[in-house]
Length: 423
Image (tube, rainbow, N blue to C red; front, top):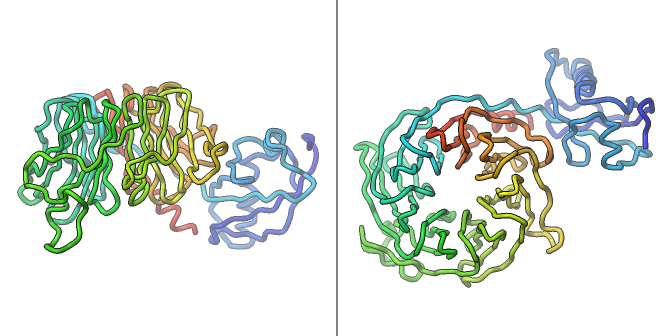
């Protein structure tokens, strides 16, 4: 192991070609830290790229962000100093900026964001539609108990459709006429025997999955089926009567406690999280469990990234976990992210950058993470005065979080623009 005064050979490399410098090996002191590495890179940028203004970089060694001195990193990871160490640098992300605070009359339990609109659900049984700039457009009654989950089904210039799920044991699909600013209830979905805790719409918007406190997972047709042309193939039970109560296509059993999160991974694969300390992956066509991951505490949420091909979970043990479902049974849990001090209630992946995700917890904080930094989040997004219950980040510019302080907090980010401009 290198001592504090020893010299180590490193090679500075980057995938961001705008900032590429000569990658020949250089000797540095083992005690060098991120600040000093930044000084070296910026000196090279002045000489080789004529970039005069200093740029702030993060540094990766073996796909892990460096937060300590190089010497401390080597001691912790046992990286060999006999060969040249590749140190990858990338432009440091700028913290998302707090924008609006949208006041509700009760706990904000669920949120879904799209490019123009924000949909929220409350414990006062109402839904709300907001513009992405924070203007309130509509309040929607209709459920008899608190709203637990919402999801967009389709969004276009004239009207949008979405689904809400409630403790009243139902899910409802809605159509919003934007010009008239009025909503129409399309279908009501009944069959669960307890609260409907979570809902997810599949990629072609034809199907949705609901998870309930009754421990069951149900698959339903969405009202988008009404718009199919005659003769087009449709799944079984595809005939839907407008405005009528609908029955599920399939009920899947296997959890022993409430299902807290559900997400479609692809056309037929669904992942669920549960209070029964398990995460399960299901085949929606066969109606069976494909795989199960067991934890030590209740899981409160799960999300899947098609970019990272990985799952993240929120848990009562205060940690976020990353799972790679492609791995062998003994190696499926890859990383644990440890910074929250209370229950982690919600998690969402970035849809633009495979390394980034957010988490919200009962410690009143939303954290923005890089998967390559398990012990230290990139940023803490503060402002909530009570526990965070929900979060969303679908367009990677707007981060939204709702909480028990009756507010929806909005943070604006240009992380996706930073990522695009520096490749």
